[in-house]
Length: 86
Length: 380
Image (cartoon, rainbow over the protein chains, first blue to last red):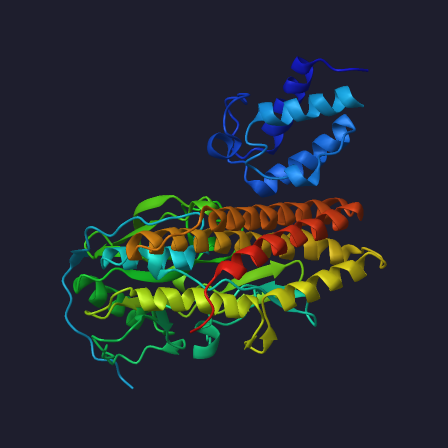
């Protein structure tokens, strides 16, 4: 089943909300994950591991930094591009 | 020996202590040193500069920069252990406070960090008040398990350095700050005296998934930073820091008995290659998830701190720092950072393909640092 970009964004935001220490008001796509939701690099990597399983994709190790995946939108765009390429 | 007590006022607050915090500074201790150095008019970006290096111990598989990164069950470090890093500082061996004021040579080339312990709460508190009454903020070490503003409160033990800036006997409080945001600390206010005392005296028991349980007696550990009145961060010692960094990275000497720099990195890479043909068991997963991830993050911060030093020293002493030097260091820090994250992912998933990615990132870090080191001056 293919997912639209909006569906991927929605699922990524739900996932972040489960992992983030601060997520009472939901997750904004463009907000910095560390600054707004307390997602440090430890949480980010755990989140990406779950996203790999959930979407059936693999994140390239050379992009594995919190600068690269600074927002929910960055993660969702990466996932969408991987799903399209599959 | 009985300790002589001076009379102290009922209240004393030291104003103007900078709430220093930089994410690239090694840890909460160094950040606390930065606050006290800044208070004394010394630029922490220069004074907290450190040698570039890398350590690897094939026996324990531990790594480090200028000392090995590992859990310890004691605060009693030797002079040698304490002085392989921070070339502008002299750290005295940890000792029990005797009550005697130690003289400071006004012409000493390095600022001094004195590490004291005392089993008596009364003695430790009296010393803290005396220092504050003299207008000197003090670094005290607390067990986060007892510190209510912290997320670890009543959940997890851990030692942590905070800066105390005052006390008020009538209100029964200490004024302190803790701006180490890396561990989600952001406190600036007062804590009851009893809470601070509990933090300074409750043994810290940490369960390390790799090295096991560590129990540290807190013994009211504290640090006093003394800056000689004629202290200056001189160009000669900044240059010496660069040439010594080159020497360490080239592995010219042993550091605390270990090979360092590129030879150590090569040994580490070789040991990692050997892991490809062995089962990646739970011990390995824990090692990568907990130990390598955290230790490599320390290396990332150290490389970023070295870059800040280069830039600040360049501005202070009129050096021309080539753009490439900045790029090499940024590239190295990026590769160490990715390696740290890959280590965590490898530890979480156990997917051996990630070991190849880990090795690749370390090779890229090494290559960038090789370029940088070829630019660093050799010892004259």
